[in-house]
Length: 427
Image 1 (tube, rainbow, N blue to C red):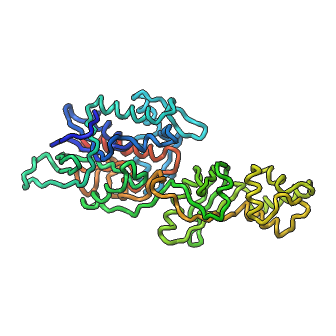
Image 2: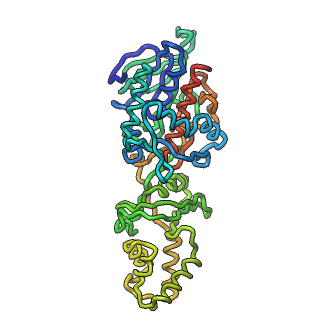
Image 3: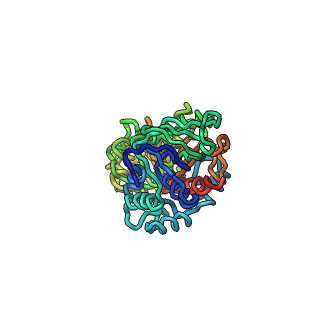
């Protein structure tokens, strides 16, 4: 049952944060708890699930067909163990048990058959209702205070949680407050201040899976809406720190699309650390300067009277071909026989190694996930319990682990929620 306002004095378990990880933790905890246990979810929003509803273009990319530790940034051995405890097959079975069948698309992403994120959210809320989990909205938590028995607390109560509607005492608490991405959903990083006060450390946070804004002089606006496969590399301090191939989407402000979103984390972290990162794009993935030069020499030799636009249109759309030619200082209507050696080499450098002039990332309101958080070394990966505070558990994006685009961060939410929920009544 979901309420807008509720005064609560005590619970056996409080879950701070009602997003994907929090709801998963609530469900698994309620299934594992002793009969009659009182479980309360506290969330500052008026309604739950804002991030779930916007995920995957409103369809909710629940997970991915193949999930590996290397798909995540963070402490690999801990990530490996967490993912193994609740894998993709377990996620599929779990959602099926709640009436949500998933389908695998050619990209490997798993979506609900109904193509609706609301179906996913409603299934989670319905299961909470079936298990008598109390969902207390409009109850933003401001502090979690450890209780001492000599101050008069019941011997079972270890925590006092202060929130917008009052206070709640409990023996155990799961913090699933998220990071800083999409702050309008209530995920603004405030949970980290609470955890710092309890003695946890928090690594610096950076926007990840975020579109990138290009300098105005770039040709991106002319290609807005065009999607193409490219090879992207991020360089910082003279070293390549990221390299990947995938789909890039040109937009009115710059670039987006899966390959850009995944690379953005590395650009953002390097930029905020003052490393002056460079984003380099190869428009013909897998081909280097020499290979493209051989192809272009051959094509212009075979059809010397064809316009350069025609030659490039064999590999790109005409809009992209024109943009690349003009950027290299070549008239798209110039015939191949008139292309000088210097012009040809300038064009090939543009095609295989164009530096995209990134001015900034698009901001936290457009970031899908947060890099940074509580170090994984500060939790027991078998239970998600804090190594510093007995009875305190952490789940989801509040931890220093972020995955690439494609359902990986949801899988992290389900897995950590499962471990925290299943184990919190057994410790």
